[in-house]
Length: 451
Ligand code: ADP
Ligand code: MG
Image (cartoon, helix red, strand yellow):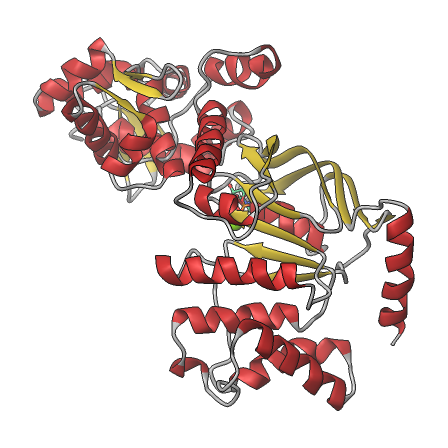
């Protein structure tokens, strides 16, 4: 086979010159939204995957992780920047990559064996080669004995093994895993993480590089040798952490805990910067604080968060907080960020403290809370700008598309739909804006809007 020959020659070449298997250089990506506006999802992303690499792309939901992966797979093109596959510009689908997704999109009417073999269909191999490869993949992921089973007979974990086998059977040098375990229960996910690393380490597959996309910090620390932490608005690689703990990694060990704390700290600093540092001045202090909107979170959740902090005596560590409210770390950070933008909490380092406003808010009844939010939320510059816009309209009301357009101009790195969600739900609660769902209009709530 031509491809096999190519691989052998490149194997010798790669040992001489260290050409990354895949590389992104200054990659940016914008999406055209239905409303006509543009959403900038990635900016200036540099990333190289080399032989032996196990890299985790770690970031909150919406930070552009999947988009990065799709660009490297050749499924979509970047708006600017270069994608190199073994040093050459990538054209079309990347033949060096196999993918494992979160959802187990298996054909229900085909057996396990057939579901795996189907992945090889586009490759056009002889029947005996197909048989050998499928058998190898089945052995690797521990599906022996299930060859003739149908998907409905399998547990979630076993289905995902089929998903992994479907990628391994391609026998490609790079394996991408996009949040592969997030739909599984904790124990099953733990087992599969360890097994995938074992398979990779065993050298029994041609996979020479793994890229795992995840928002789960422990998952990144269990699996990866390098952790790339993504920042948002627009998505970028914020920092890299080398993780040289030896495999298999013991999650209860002190060094493991230390590594998790390091990643925690970095993510906290990324999402709720303590004080603007020289290199972050442009990104956070000037550009964003000038015009910021809350993350798209529920008011009830922020209230729950504040009550939880009060319960801890008005001050708590952000990791303990995430445990206390039973949310994952990224989600907790979004809530803290919302509370901080409203001046309800302060976040020196990794501590969250109720401010004077925050204390008064938690102690107040519903009317006090609404009144305070009216001032605090209404005081955000973006909210005031929307208010000005509404005032310019004779009826003090405007269709949401009109506002969405403006928002897209003002906050080009935010998803305008999420911004509108926030404006509507928080605006309604704090009685800054009203919203008519039939007419899809936002209006200025001047306290007599009963028309
Ligand atoms: P992640 O995988 O980190 O959760 P994604 O890469 O899926 O993030 O998405 C990043 C942002 O880009 C999100 O705001 C998402 O809504 C937006 N996005 C992704 N794909 C498209 C698309 N095809 N059109 C418009 N927006 C998109
Ligand atoms: Mg994703």
